[in-house]
Length: 372
Image (cartoon, rainbow, N blue to C red; front, side, top):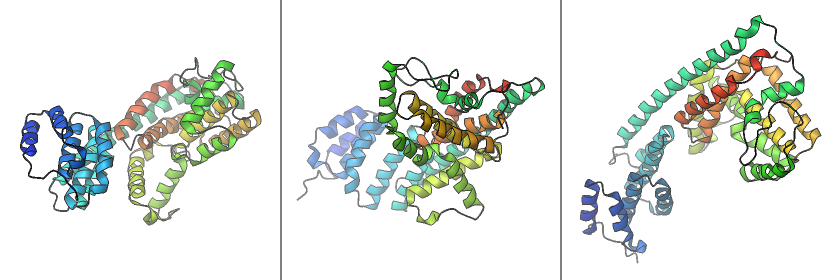
């Protein structure tokens, strides 16, 4: 028989007083003084709330995972989703928090936790963030167009396909893999990492992306959602046009939320994207970069590397007519990538665009002809 502490136990008078005095560390200590086997859900939620109020979100998540199987009542389910949503809200993931608050409201339509207010706050913040996203996307498009097209009056120089491909993978070329001295740069299409760094890069690719050979590289490049934004964008556009590529009703709740959030994100940037290219440049840049790093540390052969690069380069030539289009696609695609990677945080997407933009402007593409 369960021997949980009573919901009317005098400990709650102490916890209420400590809460009113903002003494959350003392709440944690008081709850921990009770043997865990005696924790009722009411008491368990008190320590979860205290962890949240002190910013100890890792501890809170761990406790939420523990209590979830015991949340059977409407009230407990609502509180569970509220506490999880609170963590997201406090870490600038308001869109994801909104969905969890909505789950809490669905669990308890009487709304004893006043989740409708939380949802309204999230909606207002997200709307403001999306408007900021639209503004920065427009500025990026205009700046890159001016940056690349303003030099049209002078003669641009042509580069080889190999040099052109390295410009397509601009971000990976300047990216610094941890514990290596330099990025691969632009001076040599077949450049290899120094022998003492190849092991480091191989471990990096294996531990972070599961890449150990050509097969696993292909699985990453073809299977990872964040490097196939083009196909997701196509799905969204097809759905909006009334000719869907898949049955959206077959998605589970997480899938429906993700697809809806992606659609919302895209609606704020789509008019600034190249018509044919969309966000394809992000996919191509990253894929060429992965192939180059894998070749440079001897994970794949030169033949496999060249075949991959030629394929992606051909796609770029089909989708874009100049570097201003490509770089706009790359920069806005980077924001979409971060939006997905960081649990649909619009703030993170904006911050990443702000980070990528100056890096892109440092390149030499305004002086280079687009290879046909």
